[in-house]
Image (cartoon, rainbow, N blue to C red; front, top):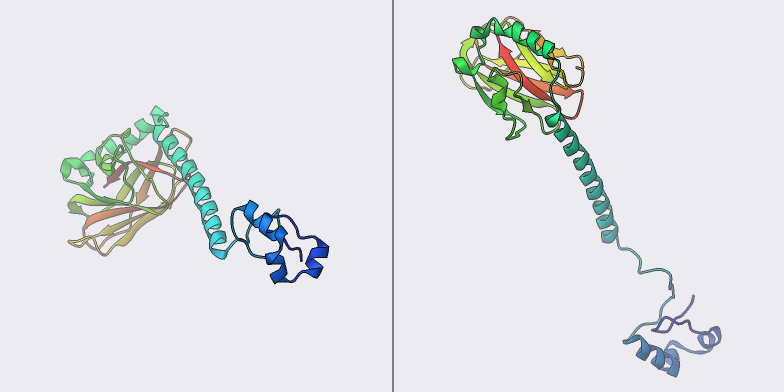
Length: 243
């Protein structure tokens, strides 16, 4: 064990062997060292190259700081991806014409459209620049975008109760999706109408998917689209058409 004076200098082996603690504290060398260090100190082991031992609280704090730093980096990456999805231009006009041709001819039977009173009641992500109402505005270019983790949900109130035969989706980066319906006056109890896994689309091109729904015993008042997973961290939904 090495003994040290208050100024950090080591006690010589000879002094350490012959002096008691009381004698060391009252020795001229101790008083000189104490005066030069600017305050009182206690006898102890010397470890000039190390600081005081780290407390458990300090270790936990350091671990939390590292986790926070890692979380901030991951968030920055996710936000970068989100901005990339939002700014990615759509291409492939042929794909968009195909969508318009597929659902435009029967627009009067789109029970979710604004034109006949359809409403978006809820969506699990909110982006003020791309609100959920874009899904039923009839425009392929406008869209709703997810901003969080999967699953994501979009709840529609139909303009008129109807038995749903199929649902068309126009999306990007959506992988697994489930369509549910509710025939009650309030959107409480839902039944599965259809489900599908959508093939990954090319960058800048819309995914077009038709989901055939199972028979229903009564007309549906509400339709819910549940996006269970995606081909990327974020997805967009451009149109939902309910026939």
